[in-house]
Amino acid sequence: MMRFLPWAYLIAAFVFIYLPVGVLVLFSFQEGSLPVPPFNGPSVQWYQTILGDEDLMAALRNSILVAFGSSAVAVTLGFLAAYGLARHVLPGSTLIRGLLIAPLTVSYLIVGLGLLIVLTRSGFGVSLWTAAIGHVVINLPLAFAIIYASMGAQQQNAERAARDLGASEPKVIMLVTVPMLLPSIAAAFFLSVTLSWDEFIISFLLTRFDVTLPVEIWSLLRSGLSPQLNAIGSFVFLISVAVVLLLELTIFRKGRQ
Amino acid sequence: MSKDQIRGWGFVTPALLWTIAFFIVPFVVMGAMSLASLEGRTLVWDLSLANYAELLEKKYLWRAVLVSLEITLTVTVISVVLAYPLAWIIAFRVSPRWQRLALLLAILPFWTSYVVRSYAWLLVLAREGVVNETLMWIGAIAEPITLANTRFATVTGFVHFFVMLLTLTIYANLIQLSPNYRRAAMDLGANAFQTFRHVILPLTLPGIVTGAFLTFVLCIGDYVTPQILGGNTELSVPQVIMVQLGRRADFPLASALAIVLMSIVALAYLLSARWLRLDRL
Image 1: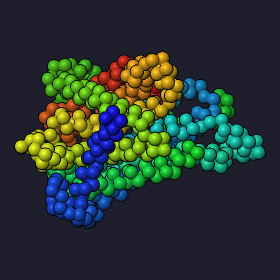
Image 2 (image 1 turned 180 degrees about the vertical axis):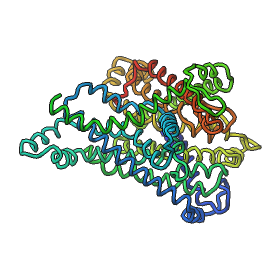
Image 3 (image 1 turned 45 degrees about the vertical axis):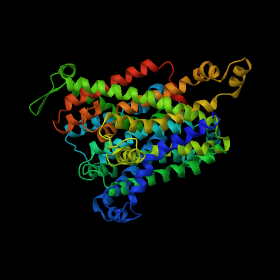
Image 4 (image 1 turned 90 degrees about the vertical axis):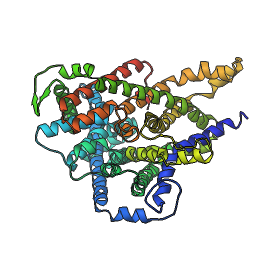
């Protein structure tokens, strides 16, 4: 009896963890207009519906743009700051690190609210650009922390060797530091892409006409349960999982060996 | 300033400017905004604590703080209690070969967008949803019961998410423990429970507190889960903030509520700081 208890718990936990995702994906193949039992199907009609939906496809393009754009900026800024702090002796470096990490301690709602106030008070207004700015704010600390943590003495020696052989600092960075840190830079980039891809509240507060996919899903939600939402939700989940698995299979596996 | 320092500043400045311009400045403006007030539709910078006073006077405002605290504490406790055994089983019962896979699978749905995840729970808990249908099929209930649009639904949605997060942090803690501690305790005559109670639990406390703190912070600041799953039966602080922003465009009151939310988080940090190991995440 006691021997089976752990396995029973493990199975129960997995059922709980996968129940919503399973129901979501299963009823995205529902034939008919209600995503609840009994299941009739499978049918791909709802996937055809979402592929033909102009608003959803526009939101999808916006989401991809914001995710990759904001992550590229966050990782670039994060890398430069990490390099500056790890390779140069600066007064007040603890304070700088604290400042760069600070946005992590504040909930997304508050980050978005602060930006919204400043943007509307200054007459700037909101757009897809401002949502991207918000995503850089929340992803920069993560990118910085991940890259900073992986800057060790090993790279420093290689950098010193390159410098002794006459390489300029930009050359050292591009030809030595970046290639050696590529796994953690890529990890920071893809983590940032997934977080931005899934992010809702900042995009919701800081966009108006051009919205991202989670915001578009949110406005569809007002009309209640629909297999169309299941289809788009399954699609969003699939993309996130693909990015995470890619990360796991390539970067982290290499990192362990 | 030396040449080395000037170069160093060159690298750090872009990130620093970004953080100051788009995080620190908005934050300070929000703080100032919480001291302003709205007269009709015009903003008056009267530097008063009126918004904070309103928070104590108006029932729907302080109720929201209580609701948020209740939900968050319930979620944190249930999540820790459910996640600990799961992390334990993965760390000590699953063979090392399959551990990484088991852990990866246990936290994969973590990466669902929170809007989608809450919607999925709405499907599961709906009147004609899977849970009601199953319960009626096995004969446990005769009529569908109301599960969606309740606090139960909000807590379930949250617990689902945080069990995954906590399993990860507690697992990371358990796996670092040397098996020698357990062996030593057993050799000295402790039974399995005593070993857990006096050896394993104290050693994993930092991991638990760190995970619980993260749960607390993320849970109390979330708008989506209570809005989709809890409906409008009772409002949490983030929901009230969004109401102020949307319907009334009352930025001062929304800012004051945001500051209160942050103070609660800061307080939680101070209370748990002794055991927190945020650098070890």
